[in-house]
Length: 273
Image 1: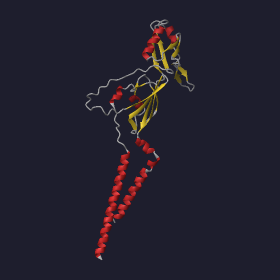
Image 2 (image 1 turned 90 degrees about the horizontal axis):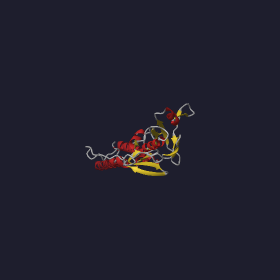
Image 3 (image 1 turned 90 degrees about the vertical axis):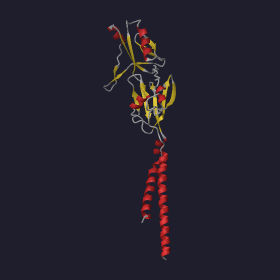
Image 4 (image 1 turned 180 degrees about the vertical axis):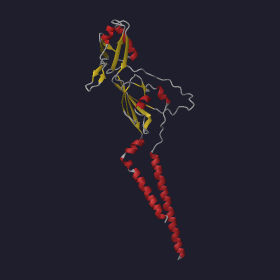
C-alpha cells in the first residue's frame, strides 16, 4: 500500500516537473517571439566613419539654388544718387490686415521674369542669386551710376514630415540649408525613423524628382541632395516596428503575453504545493 502511495507521489512529482518545464519553455518562447518582432536598427548618423578620423575627408558638393518661377525675391538697389535710390525703392512692409506687416517682393512669373521699375521685364529664372545680382547691375548701369544690387529669397521654404519630433514647413533665412539642419529644425528623427532611407522630393522646372539617401553612410555628405533647395520636401519613413505597434493584431500582444505570464505564475504556485 505504501509502495503504491509512493509510486503515485513520484508520478505526481514527475508531472509537476514536466508542467514546470513546459511553462518555462512557453515563457522563453514568448519573450523570443516578441524580441524577434523588433529588428535591430542603426540609429547612428554616418556610422560607417572610422573612429580615428582617417579617410573621413569628404568633398562637399554644394550646388547653388537657382531662381525658379513663383519665387519671391527681395531686391534692393543702392547708389550714390538719393533720387535713384528712391526710384528703385519698393514698399516691402505692407499691412497684412491683422495689425501685422508682411514682406512683399518681386514675384518671378511663369515666364521667368520679374517686373522691375524702369527696366520692365527682366529674365532671372535659372540664375543663381549672384548671377541675378550681376544681371540687374548690368541693366541698371544704363540708368544709375555705380548701382549696388542685393537679392534675397523671401519664400525659401523646406518641409520635413514623417518620423520626426516636430514635422512642419520651415522658412529659411538664407539660400543654403543642409539636410541635417532641416532635420534639426524638425527636432530630429524619432527612434522609428529610417535613417537609411530618407526620401527627398524636389520640384524644378515643373518636374518632380524623388531621391532616397542613407544617413548611416558618410557618402551622403557629397550628394547633390545634402544641400536642400527651395520647396524641397523631406520625408522620414517609419520602420516596421512602428507599423507593428499600431496594427490591430499587435495591440493584443501585450494582453496575450500578460495572460500567459499570469497563467504560468498561478500554475507554478499550484503545482508546487
